[in-house]
Image 1 (cartoon, rainbow, N blue to C red):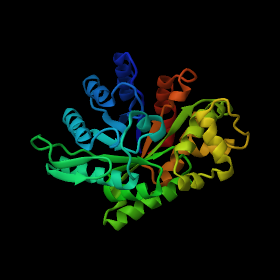
Image 2: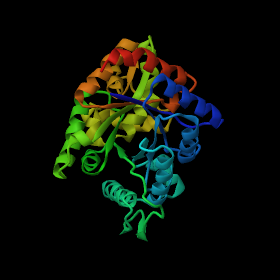
Image 3: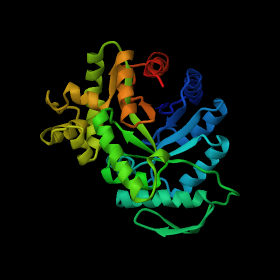
Image 4: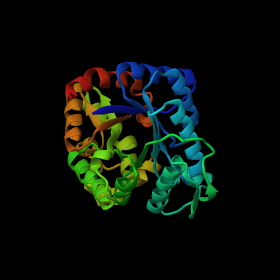
Length: 337
């Protein structure tokens, strides 16, 4: 089992770098920097981290081809792979359409087709090939990287869409499974990934599965669950594909209320819309031994990497650096090999 986390870069950048460097010293294998908003640029932040850390793997988690043209993603990824040889990971996803893409006038197109084409385009570019392709989102006309021997860059796909899980099995080196901490649901999702892999003659042994979920160590589980319920779990439910939402046990009758409550803080969320057991399907929160038990269950379901997500919505309630340290010092030793 490998352990990773995501952290939003925030000024001053030196303090952000200090946190990542300390996390490396605590034993984390991989640090992700998101590209899911209008914070400081993740590729620039990651470049800085290559100078601030000794060898921890680094990844952008995640960027998308709707806002960033694939050739620009490839150029930035190639530079970072050169700075951190063999330890840079490129995370791709859809991005948040309503909150981000629509507000900057990003082009629209079918997600599965667009992301599958993007993964193939990036593979070809990293292999030194020239690419000609056109779709509703981007175009390249006989374009190749002007780099001698471009580095290999592992591609991870972040999604909650069943067909995108299958596409990841077909094309990606890894899959970031967002907001799923339930091992039964995770096993079904891995089944979707396997379907895509087998259809393209690939083995699951060559595909990493990363569980990307809010994970908080705290003795008062009830308090953490309450903090997570509306801003974090409600948001996750809203952004999840309907089939995966159903797999997670979300009642379709409550979804309209959950969705409305995400965009309007004055709307009352009904008491039974997101019950405690549902929070536990999306996140891991509680004492160290409880967190370790939950991680072991995910490992047994087929997860090889944990991605501890630090929810921005809980900034000011929890000290994320303390949480990261406790996860590595108190939880991980109890997980075992």
